[in-house]
Amino acid sequence: MTTVADIKVELAKVLYPGFQKSIIDFGFLKDIELVDDKTCVVYLDITSSSAEVAEQLQRDISSTLEKIGISNATLNLKKPEEPKQQSNSVSGSNIAPQIKNFIMVSSGKGGVGKSTTTVNLAIAAAMQGKKVGILDADIYGPNIPRMMGLQGQEVEVVGNKAKPFNAYGVDVMSMGSLMEEGQALIWRGAMIMKAIQQLLRDILWEELDILFIDMPPGTGDAQLTLAQSVPVTCGVNVTTPQHVALDDSKRSLDMFAKLHIPIAGIVENMSGFICPSCNTESDIFGMGTCEGLASEYKTQVLGNLPIEPAIREGGDTGKPIVYCQPESISAKRYMEATAKLLAFVDEVSDKAENASIQPTTPPGVSACSSSSAAGAASQSEKKESHAGCGCSN
Ligand SMILES: Nc1ncnc2c1ncn2[C@@H]1O[C@H](COP(=O)(O)OP(=O)(O)OP(=O)(O)O)[C@@H](O)[C@H]1O
Ligand SMILES: [Mg+2]
Image 1 (cartoon, rainbow, N blue to C red):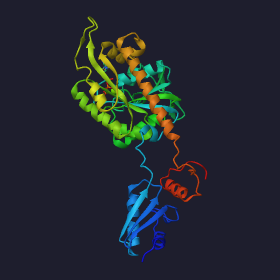
Image 2 (tube, helix red, strand yellow):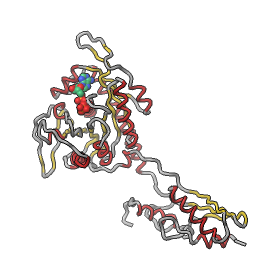
Image 3 (tube, protein in one colour):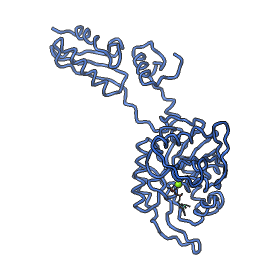
Image 4 (spheres, rainbow, N blue to C red):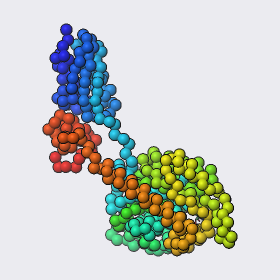
């Protein structure tokens, strides 16, 4: 008749998946309950939350114990909770580490006012005391130099890096300043990736609180490259209020969700028209339609900006309204939207800091220790995934 001791002898032959050590050597076996001649329950306490590891163990234990007549071996597994999908702001790599926060300004379709919004939010953030930059990542149609009054200015090169310009208290670099005016570029996937990474790495960005990034419209290689190159703190979606534009906005908001980028909010641009002569407000593209979209994506409307000729003029002449006409309704709305955005950035940064100081090993087990069996397993697991704790042990 099979005994608990016999079962233990057999279990000593079962290797922990991916390792050359048995589950007993690792100290994972907690108990064996022999129910009858053919049935037993094996209690294990393991360090991996992976479903594949659990399945592999079940298979290996069943087949090993079958050899000694136990045809029904049940596994009772205690394992850590699966790690939650981390926000990109925590998990992303950072090729421009001197910059604390990156805000991606996106839209589902072109021409809705992304660049105008980027410029005015960035200047408003600088006016509210932040050290700010704008990266014009719209490699297809870079408009930021004109909107910031920098058109035609020569880039200063130091060593093999380019110095950003500064206008209205904001550091600025654009693909438009690096290529000849009016030059049309045809970008393929790999080139887009290189261009975006160079705009982050080969520009002499100073230490910044926030880099606003004006994206090309849509959801393509540029957005993906950015998310893979820096930890994007949050995304802002710019849209006009008509339903056709909202449909496209959903794609842009879905992209943020897929890339694990927290959504700071939606800017409803061209929301109503205030007639400069009689001050009457008319509803051209619609108004207030973004509230529903915001609640669908559990986010907020950062602001409603009317169609105002002065906003367009500010863009065309390089005199952004938020700076040049601070008393206008639109300037005040940009300032309010920015205050909401900065509050959101603080919230995300606090969470990211907290996440980075959470212990990653059970209490009492050092991440560097190889003295306990469990410690040894988690240490080896870390090595496998190339994510060591960084100590010299
Ligand atoms: N609220 C507004 N009132 C009046 N004009 C506006 C407003 N917002 C943007 N515009 C004007 O609309 C045009 C398009 O805006 P902008 O270039 O910012 O859009 P975009 O989304 O960045 O476009 P693209 O997709 O081509 O990059 C510009 O001429 C700009 O000055
Ligand atoms: Mg633009």
